[in-house]
Length: 416
Image: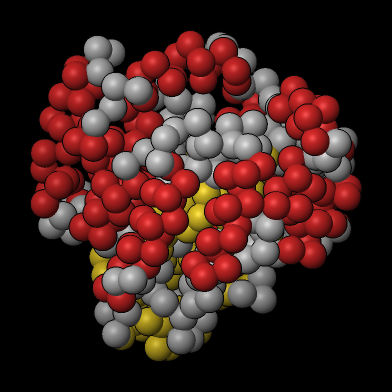
């Protein structure tokens, strides 16, 4: 495959133009030449924290703070979800992400094998997990065994099973330490919610005399690194621990603002050496899976908070959504347009009215582009989405034709 006459974003923060050649699922040549590009090729976007099947409850509980949102709006509906429901929501969310240039997602939700199967069927890369909850009987053993079983299949390497606890406040110390002990064999990074609200952060200190990051680190759950969502109320010492332990911060600015949780101190985290990635969170607290929008909001929020337009320049925000995300999820051969790297790519139509003139491409990516501008998404050299093509553009994925019908049937079964 050859993508010709295009702009492309190169790892050294430079915009090139010319052609990209793909063979065997990898980039084999980047040929720079004078041309008049009508497309932009950028690394596929990496969504490092989501609850994909929450497309089933998009917008539910709007206007409620986190605790009430969970307890009054979300948990009662989730308690009724079946594997079939989760599969329908996951398939719809995967389609939404592929159509927006996202090539990999880290998902945290019930019935993770349903999400994993949908990812494998679609061709999208991902990280899935069994959510650790200490009050669910048998969940500890399930977390351990499901991680071991899934990762034992070589054919599933593009979709890996990571370790997970929902949070400090929905687990106890015995659960966390037992899971950490098991992870000496499993050697998986931890996916977790951390310090999303002031209340959560302060109650953890009251219970344990430690912040959530300090507490989780002391249990051993970060011994193989990890990626922590939100981190709104993290301290400088938390950031130092994260940098030392290889724990990435997954910034979710839209969700944090919608739920009134606050603003993570992203520039400070980066200053202290933390790898910062981006995530959309779920469709009930966002309410979409548009990583371009997440880049835009992240950029604006921190400039505004600092009263400084130089904070988080466009290239840094693009890195958060691409190579930093790949690093957070342990993807060593993606997140950049470089020879030898996997051809996980997002191709944008530069003929859209709001993308002309193309004076500053990185600025356009962060401040002008949206998911609807994506013309093609490529994962491992395979076109998994092409706007305007047959079957909704999803590369012949069998689920695409019936996905909307299945989603709405699931919503009906849940009484929504």
